[in-house]
Length: 410
Image 1 (tube, one colour):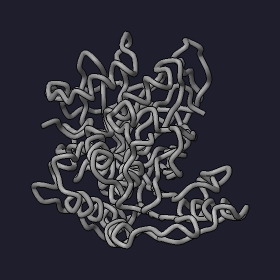
Image 2 (cartoon, one colour):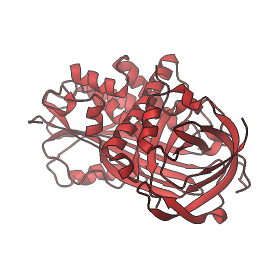
Image 3 (cartoon, rainbow, N blue to C red):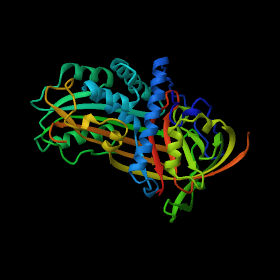
Image 4 (cartoon, rainbow, N blue to C red):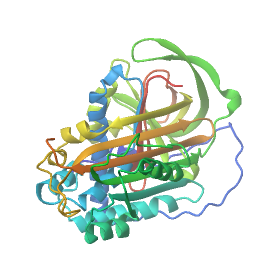
């Protein structure tokens, strides 16, 4: 079985001690997520999904030709989990296959996501993690009771009917996005399709301070070399701290902890002659040897402040990963409605800001169902002054909230 995405370091302690900012003593409430043996296997599969998704997106976005991208695997996983409750036969099987969960029952899938949705926000009371789900059915179309019940009970979904032909429908859906992401993503749709049968949405909001914050006084302007070779100016945060560090033929990597180590940001810098997509390919193969030389080192870290924001059509990536019938007239969503439906839109909007204090980010994933139609200890310099990858992870479960590439920090 493959290992959790970039996860061979998750079992290691993340230590940070620096002279940057004196921190105030806090006593947050800690409540780790406890997974049983089956759920741990599922978590590993979800890590693999995050890895292969990011690799496919990097390829489709043009690899090194694209400076920045950001995706939330967890937001997409939740939306697909809800969708799977309405799918049947091969359509259902392909959704679970794409998620890496085809060997598990629908009940096991729902229970797993229920545990994550309910648990992620209680891992550490000092860190804000909020996820919300909603199902919007077109007025006059009956969504099956079991479909509604499973999404309400397992995904805490809000289920409502809305007249999609009403021009104000888009405002109501976007208002939900704005509210559940603390205003970071004020809208996800430009318009509502009046012939759509259903919209399924997941939102994710994350805000956390670093375990040891960067000192703003140490932030300096410096050169960042983009993937095209252009040199631009960026504001580099600086610190020295003890942390896990690994170097192999593909990349070097270290981590930054958020408060009480309950979430971490993993930083991955390709070796000088290695591309981002080559690193993603190596990571997607879950080779344990990539992490075997992990050491505890004193890291002299320089990384740019950055803000990423984008909106992506995820259908091509999902098709490449094995989810095909859902987007055609062969789709079977008879467990959701008696109205013949196929998926016409899978879109995600994301935003993430990283600075001296910590990180704040959000994601919204929307799925549109439409009426069928043709269709050893040492000191290490770790300077992130050229394109790099990062992820925000909940270590206990390996849940990947965000994965991104920074090629032009702004």
